[in-house]
Image (cartoon, rainbow, N blue to C red; front, side, top):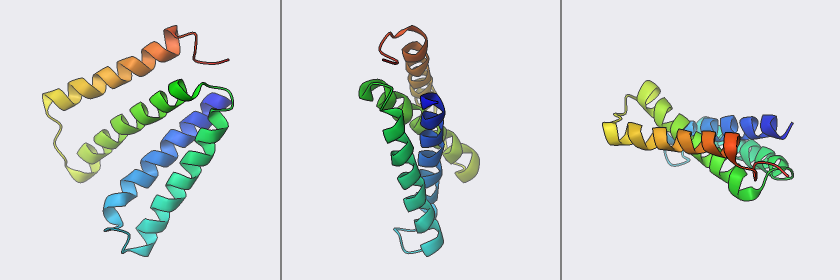
Length: 109
């Protein structure tokens, strides 16, 4: 169940971050509420995750997946450019998350 909590935390963080641009510096109420709700849910479910997964591993997966997904959303939804070094960097982040999950003995306790 802790992996499900982590997935919810990642999705909620991505939703919250995606609405940051639309909030226009927290001047627009609807998008601003989405930012606050997204981050609130993200931190709540991340805290549930960290009851079973070490903080270093949980946070690495949460932040790495979030960074990669936000960059992809920026590219797809906002037309932001991703150059080869950005794609390489995100690929390394994904590879690191895979290594943590497949090979690290610290992934759960």
